[in-house]
Image (cartoon, rainbow, N blue to C red; front, side, top):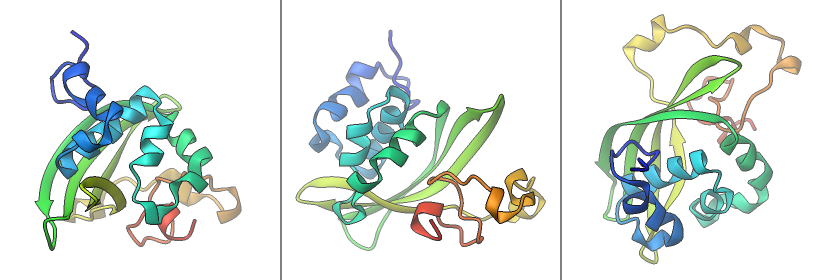
Length: 170
């Protein structure tokens, strides 16, 4: 059995692979989010670019997207799913784990998805804040001077907005 990277415990060819081959098979925001995570693991840059909402102009960010896909992804945990303001909007909160320089990190995001022409697209996301965050370990990059900070496009923005760097100060 070839388990799907999305953590569904299903075989990849019965889970995200069909969606990777036909975007219209993602019937819910969660299915699209899981397939996008699996595409990161599998290195499917075109799929990730094509499943951004058209207003994001992801093609212009292809190189940065390819770099984020190159991360060492370790696992996915879906925290919650929510309906949006209408039937064509939905939210998925998740934690995606990755390793970098021998350390494991967690990217937690509440992603927003929109459906247009019967296709779900990722449009944006925020980094949830909780009461536990006040005791969290501060990212060591924030102790560097601004000119030395290397911020990835999917990292939290250094301004503290809770948005991704690419959607804020990037």
